[in-house]
Amino acid sequence: MVSTTKRTLRKNAEAVARSIGYRLLRLIFRNKPSAIPLHAASCRKILLCRYDRIGDMIVTTPVINFLREMLPDAEIHVLASPRNSSLLAYDRRVAKVYEFDGTQKPLAALRSLFARPLRTAMRKERYDAVFSLVFHKTTMAGLVANILTGAKSVKIGIAHPTRTALYSTLFNLLVPIEFERETMAELQVRLVCAAFGWEYSKEIVRYGVELSEAHTACAKEILRAFHHHQQADSAQKIVFYNCSAGAPARQWSLRRNEECLHLLTERFPNAHFLLNTAPHDRSLGEALHAVFPIKTTLLPASRDLLDVCALVQHVDAVFTPETSIVHIATMYRKPLVALYSQLSYAVEWLPFGDFPFRIVLTEGEEPIESIMPEKAVGAFGEVCS
Image 1 (tube, rainbow, N blue to C red):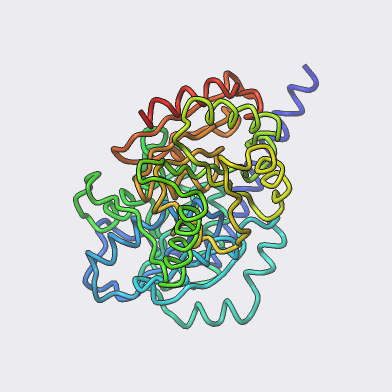
Image 2 (image 1 turned 135 degrees about the horizontal axis):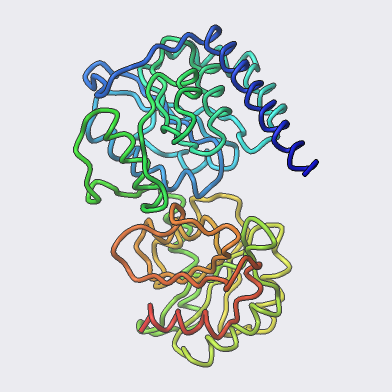
């Protein structure tokens, strides 16, 4: 009874503090409500805030594609993170890319927002519209938009079911978006359509990054060397086998990967597996290649995400634990098997589109290690039959 009373008092105190804090922010930021639809013809400069992880930027490329098509004369800028900004390095659709690390702890993130070079440069841009596409941690998303772009920019976010009145302090326009029914790519394009009053359909959700000639040439050279070394015939299937994920709970151990590759090489003798690892997982790739020296090729270590995109574009199938590789495979519509834990499973992060893929889920909220390789291999047979 005492602990329940304490929890209630704490929640009430937090609610009061939140209310007072937002009232102060309302005085500081002075965001006036904007009506739907925004006047598209007057939007000459647009900022997309996507300052988080690699996969988040890939699922944002449909927004970039769509805005470029609908507003061909507008400048599109992106606030990216150090992790994902390289995906836009050669993108002619985007005029400028700024960097802010939104994965930092809150106090460190706030300090970096007030760094003079970034804040001064972005305020000079005088954005007409700022889309906050980081849908979690809405308060931080609002602070990012306000501190970096100022009071005159129209800041657009998603409406929270119970906190719309509070978040209106940080945004000029809050659009109701229904989660848990669509992927993140669809949700983001739907937000843009709602803000401008444009008609939404699944057909306008189109992924795509721009590669340099060097990236394309590098991928083709890897495949050419593989075919020459293996003397492979044209019927051989090349599978991009990714070993790494963003966290230990979303990644298989060496033992599980060995078991899976043993089954795959037995059941699909005409397949060859390109082993991809993050730089810190290099030893895992080396160990797997040592066990399967003929049926696998260990890909060169690269921190350039566009190298991975260029290679995935030319393979026949993709096998990966839950990670950004899922979204790269989605971009190129490659037959895909992805391992997901219900610890972090959400509809928003599933592949989008009409192409063959299977999601292999844990039974409960366990790490991916609990998925038996037999189950994953069965799924692979379904998408690659």
